[in-house]
Image (tube, rainbow, N blue to C red; front, side):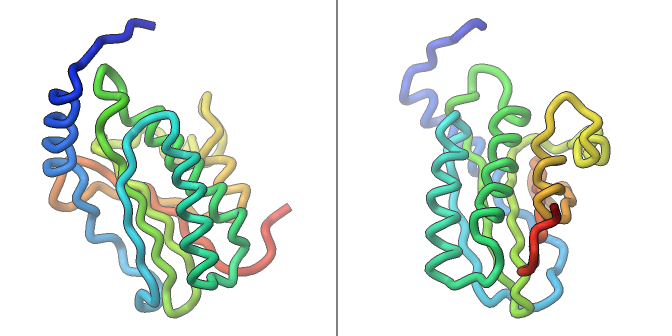
Length: 172
């Protein structure tokens, strides 16, 4: 693996350009109920991102008393973040651009986990969810009870992968 050194000020400039250009959160398909609670945060697309997402998602869902299985929801958020870091951030910018996480709890107590990245397409999404690709992250999220969709961001070049979770038992 070849590593290219990019000076800190250039990484900061590139990150700012990518954030401004690619990572406005998309107007998402409407959830079942209105939003009772919404929280958004950006994370650097770096190996530590899934760990940070687990920490923040667990805290937010606990503080706001989501009635679903918080540990399973945190695992799903982590998987989606790991996929964004691994697949959507190739090349020398891998340690710079941000991904966005949005947690929305609806009035119907559904949890929407949205992870946005600057890559506009998602080839073989259905195969990934079904576990018919080399990676198994989306398949794992589906097995944990998440309903998964993806959509292009309306006003930017990126995309959002969404997991819908409802309180109740986790599939075996």
